[in-house]
Image 1 (cartoon, rainbow, N blue to C red):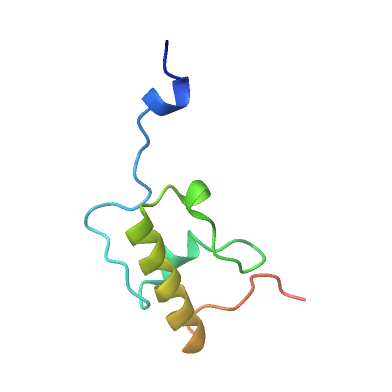
Image 2 (cartoon, rainbow, N blue to C red):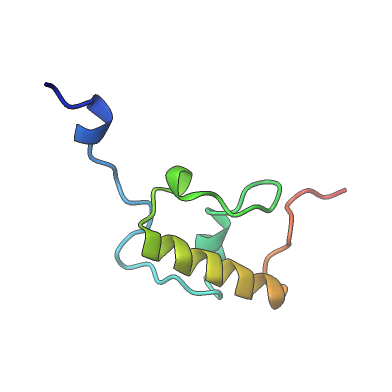
Length: 75
């Protein structure tokens, strides 16, 4: 049996190896927050489970310190 096309396709990582996941790195965290202010799921962000957990913790820490806005809509 042939494997499906998706399993044989190689995914490019969404975080470069030189980027550090930190709550102060707002430009990195913004890539994983939707317009409504929600953290994007792992299947959309193409992260490993460890990276996804680190991103979620960093976004929550940054929100508490009011570094990024909780939502991006300006009403």
